[in-house]
Length: 116
Length: 114
Image (cartoon, rainbow over all chains, first blue to last red; front, side):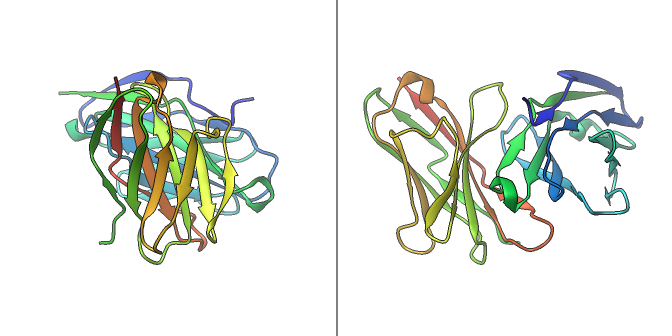
């Protein structure tokens, strides 16, 4: 079974609008971490935001926020006030806790295009 | 700000040849990882390394692959006999085991096997 599922291969958003990128995950470990990374066309992986399984509040980092719904096992990324520089691939990832080897799992990614 | 570095940025090799990809993780980090990303596809986990030994590896990481931390700063991935399907971007990452589990990626090495 897929550990991380990203169902949106491509998304478009108008500049200055908000956009939500979907991510669902699957784990039986009570301790886990959820991450979003941005990969621009240059190829590097840029860490955006982290949510721990025990965190009570949704994580926020500037224009990025993570809509964490634990019961639904979803960790959607919300980008507010989109900018042209936000056009990139976005990967959701999860790290299981120590019981399952601390491995990172990545989704298939969502390609975001910001339209002027 | 400390960063993970990788060399070379691009490596071209012939099928059957051995390649060594090099990484310098962030100095106080304890966990080290290699991932690969075939062009246009998702990032795939290869191997994790902790306390001078492999802690976990994926099914991709077969006998053709090996990792080493030869001198306390470098972390290398060796592919003994490259195949065409090894062509990919290889990312090194490191992690300081403290709460946030934030993993820092290097810029990647693009390996092209001809």
